[in-house]
Image (tube, rainbow, N blue to C red; front, side):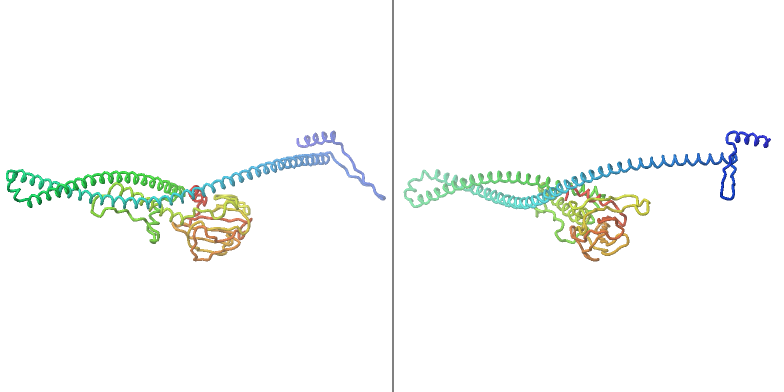
Length: 443
């Protein structure tokens, strides 16, 4: 059966592809190559496959070329969109910086007003004490005067009674003119003294009314000062409290830590004590102490803000943020890795500043980071400034916020001139922009 099938296939192929001979002739000999039907079929199939492959390959190349052109156009559009977004972000950053400067000016003005109002409050309290003392003295004098007036009136009435009782003895009075003259003189002096006492009493009452009015006006003035102080303190404390909460730093714990580590210079304000007689504090004393507590809290916030990295490490008007915190693709290895900080691109030599008070723990070369500055701050916070071209601090040096610590460069594992800025809390990296954004509209 197989033989008959093979014979049929061979006959079909001979009908479609008859046997052909290719002659090869030379000067001395002639040879030929016989092309059987099966050989012709294999050759034609190979040529068809080759042509099909060429057509498919050409189509793929053309599609890739068209797709590459579209991709380049899309990349250009994305680049233009990215640049427009960067310009918008830069404008917004400049606006935020201007608002921060305006907020700082308002904050300084509020502090100056608070200081002035506190001085006025203390002066007003001293004046009120003096007025209270003066009123007490006047009241005491008035009581003594009224007592003397009553005594004089009684003596005068007794003298009048004695005079009327002796009217029958005019003969004896005529014989004693010296005694009568003396009695008249005493009566005149007594009447004059009585009139003077009444005049003094009326004057004392008028002075008392004037002092009571002045005291009432003074109390109203004090209440106004208290309200302005309370509003100014609230306006000053609320943004700072919000700033620490947005940065993930519980204000109560931060203030307690600052209070424990306080060294006594410019320190917390002492409570106001106006009474020395063991009496209950007045409403004004309570309000004054509440304001002083708020001022103490404001002072602690100020010290805490100096020790946390709420400032920017570079002048944002001279640089742009080229990369943020988070996972991204490594251009060298192709894998995903955590970018532990924020990158700010700028010119070589751009000034780099400390973002908070602290102590330099590293100032030198470190693998990957290049020339690196590390600063230890309070609350378990550490900041790192990498890829610098020049270092301006040494290990163990104490720095303050805003001190010039390094110059921007391209050292270490870097693809261009920029600053790699890290913030670590208890050794773990966190997004630095949390602190920078939390301080907007405050500093």
